[in-house]
Image (cartoon, rainbow, N blue to C red; front, top):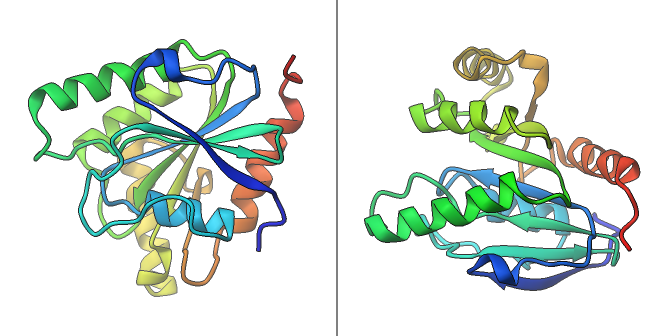
Length: 198
């Protein structure tokens, strides 16, 4: 259970709506329907992020304020083909500005479904994120869906696809809580290294 005080702060549809208070931020990125909202609710130990069976529901960048110290940021899912071309271009540009020009951003958790080999888009996003200054952690969602042996094999497969070491991947499950403590530790470690906001 999270002992943190977590509140939804804002939804940003344009860059001018991003927080300007200097509080450090950790963002969560992943393909549509990868389980990002469910993971966030698991971290929050309460239902704050909207969960839907319909991919692509998140249509803004959502900021959640934690302990009045930092933000966890829910980015719109990528790869949802049924969005219009103009919508996809707008979201892509907005997320690009957020990731590339945001001095408050300390880390990005990149979510990938452990049950499948990484898509071409997953691989491109992973390479792109690793070229940016913020720290990156790859989180393998839905780990409870596989047996221990199958999970270990898939972890190796995903690591090869993303060109990273298997030890750099964190299996996570909203069902059994696997990875929750490690993910919070990673976040809090980043916050400990971040400069205090003014």
